[in-house]
Length: 128
Image (cartoon, rainbow, N blue to C red; front, side):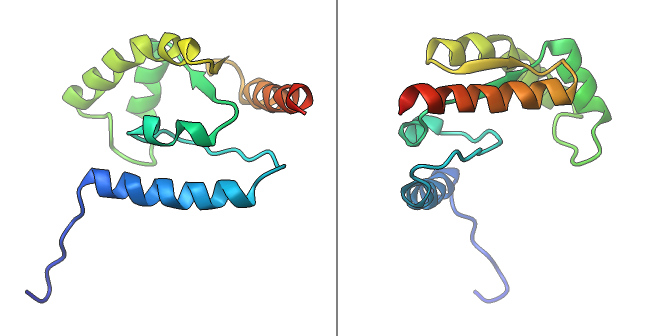
């Protein structure tokens, strides 16, 4: 029918993203690249990253940031925020157990950024 769009399932979106990321990874060999954000299905593309750095915050900080952000409304509804906060409790340990560098995101942004850059540069120094 004309005038109607058909949405692809989330799995298709992840597959498209992974294909694009694999292409990008081939072109980025030898360079430090920062991919920021969180996406579902990361087990499908974890092999693309030499180092994973995860910024974590406690639930009080996360709850405040969700309530006061102005970029989107996700997490403002009680049921969304509850799910996010429940998941947040185990994120740091889950990523740490998979070898990620954990960065405390409650600190000033300049300190967080400096730690991320330092971790990437340290990895690069010891991986070559």
